[in-house]
Length: 465
Image (cartoon, rainbow, N blue to C red):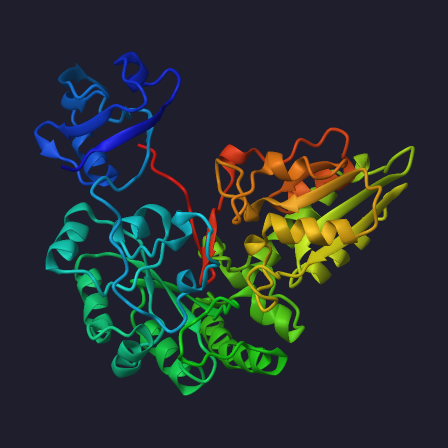
């Protein structure tokens, strides 16, 4: 039996008024069985509600009440999907979840491929496990937009890469989404010498031909950790091969901008950082439609920092006594941080950039979001001591819980150092931390944005209704 288990009750909410408590289970609304918060949201649109609730003692109660049409229940559930997340049926060459270190949180080993998580949180799906009933429900509820893992549009190659015999149906499945009037964003995890080169050209052209339903395309480099055991050989991109991808994609980008005024195809930041190329300006990201996928994060961070500096220009006087701060980053983004911080030039402020090699997953993994408490601890202990404060990236913590990937709590991590430690989430946070250290409070863990990075796509924590 599927049901939604209440995790928290929002103060002043309808749920509080109904005297619901954490642990209560919502089983059905107006006779409708609930598979997920999508069902709940549609059932809850009525103004007269009969809601079957099961309490922690096993007793069931029918709660009847009237409500405003747009009034929500006001709870957070343990999971947004009540009948269990649909797992991935593929065995992709590049699967990042298969490369996770042993003895880490169980949640990091979950390979979801659920269209509901795609609609609710922007998770990318391959659609290889979807059946006609799923497309009918997508049409019924108009679940748009969705986020689709394309990888390539060559049917035979896609079956090969995903190691799934149904993976070649992608184009007909996209047609079903379009027939349901559903828009979608797409992603390609680019594997060197496999789906790049002419195959990437083909994939880009095929997806471009599906506009306006196709809304955007992200191309991100394959991530490889030292824990990968798949026997299929994969190669990481290097400076030369990353530059080649940039040149190839830029040709499509320029053509699109000339014809439509939009870029449509976006490259992961890692390509530019690896190639030593300048990041595109903000306008090339068309409002950052795939920011949650890590596309344009560096440019967005830079612009936020510069805008915050401009907004606070009159207050940027520096300090009346020496302040020394250490800023922890992934190795890829460290040069960008240094350039930003050097531009401040505040009196009595000394900043040390501390790039952390990812020894936990392997040094080919260079993004800040996959740093562990262990690697940061080792690097900081080797760095010069005596800092007034340490700034760490909020993206390496699980949202809401403030726990690192290696299961260390933020509180535990802070206890390892005499210096005050605060989190930084975006460019404005960094500016405020550097310029106003004594009043800076860090990022509220409850509002953290991303909990895990898989194939350069982030999975948000959620489940509110």
